[in-house]
Image 1: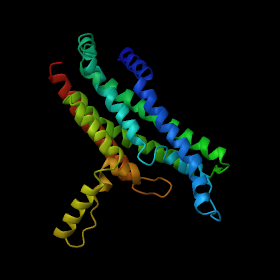
Image 2: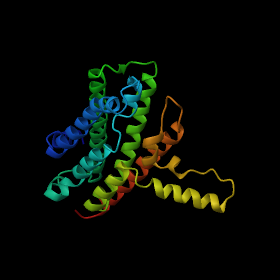
Image 3: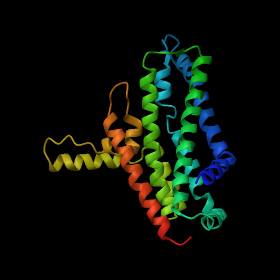
Image 4: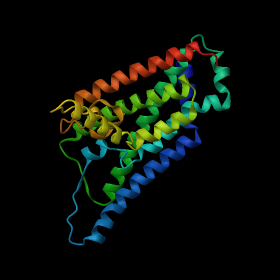
Length: 254
């Protein structure tokens, strides 16, 4: 499995799409951080701009829909072996076909961590150039928030892994990657909440508090927002969907 993991990591770091998506996401992060204060000053010259807390930067390293680049990249990576026919060759060389699923999952986790770290560094560089970067006391909480969001991103990737490798649908993988990135399901969650509230008077149930894509936007360790929910949801979704993919992939002919 170690040799297979090395091979997958090599394929990832030599992937042109991965490099392009990472560069675009980080570039947009940097440009937005540089231009936002300038635009605000032009719109309101008397405005007092707030410093950028490092804890806030690392807690949200990819914001404003930029996660779409990460999910498109990982979705394409998942399905690339089927497009090239490589999966047939490698499956015949390993004793356990299911190990391919585990290795792809691990590689995707590394992929997401790279996006998070590089995205955070891009924002940090922009804030430093603007002279607005502040290293505050909440940095440990910011790091913890980023790691929990990383876990939630892994949970979402396990769902994409199921679509790409388990049922082999490239279109569904990319579509759901985009949906997760832009929080397109939030309206659906609100509708379900409204329906439950109408049926059960006084209900405060919030479906978004139990969905990984919504928690990706709302969890915050510094403020204590939904941390237990995020940890449990991240682990449960990851285990369930990775197990489903593992089982389905082993049973199907390649």
